[in-house]
Amino acid sequence: MKVLVIEDEPLMEALLRATFEPLGHQVVASRSGDRIEALLAAHDPDVVVLDVVLTGSQADGFEVCRRIKTSPYRDTFVVMLTALDSDESRKKGQEAGADAYLAKPFSPLELLHLAESRTPT
Image (cartoon, rainbow, N blue to C red; front, side):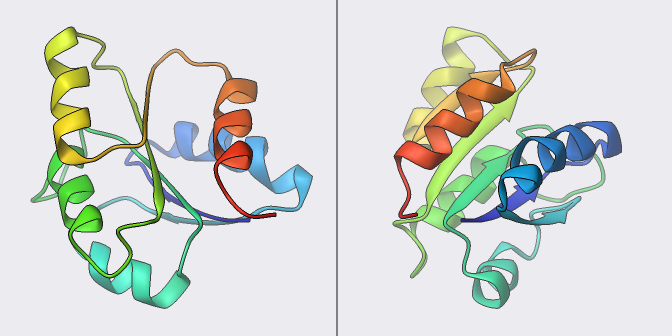
């Protein structure tokens, strides 16, 4: 499985790599979703793990998700992984087209299960 991680925190990126890579999944990471179309075209991921708050990025995760879901890669499974855990944030994620929404702190096993159960092997 190919996983595109869009996360601006290096420690969180490292945790996500440690979740997927030992099981043979390929991880590509970006600190910004500003060039999401180019990232999708270059890597054709099965899953995008997307933070909402992307410091230094022009687009937040909700906007990046909308761009994914209106692109030729609209069928890519998108998991929003964020510290924002309000009903309003979850609703915004759903409206943006997210396939799943996990709040930090999260279970890496739950994330792995979500990604593996929704993507081809």
